[in-house]
Image (cartoon, rainbow, N blue to C red; front, side, top):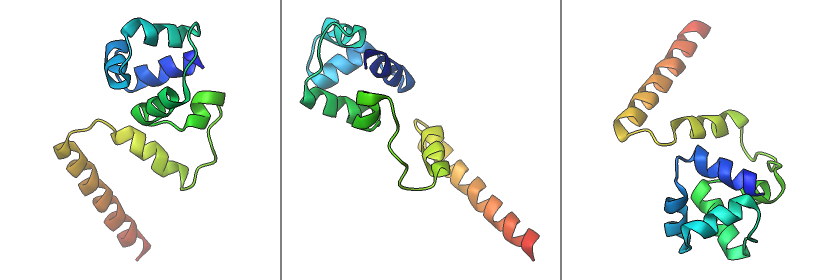
Length: 107
């Protein structure tokens, strides 16, 4: 589980200090959690799941829960995570352009 927590933290671009501050822990505690030498309390795991935007099931077992929506939406959400508001508007305009192009091609 420690490796998954480290990978999720790095994916989100967070430092161990960032995580420690968010959880109210010391940085060495976060290090020990990621190394597997400190157990994670249930409340801490819940906070980590929210912070890393990952399901608790994944953090606990490494398996992804069955998607509740199209997998493309999950990919898209991760792809645009961290973009500025201006960039998100550009992505939305491009999506609208693609929809219009597809409807013209069908005509």
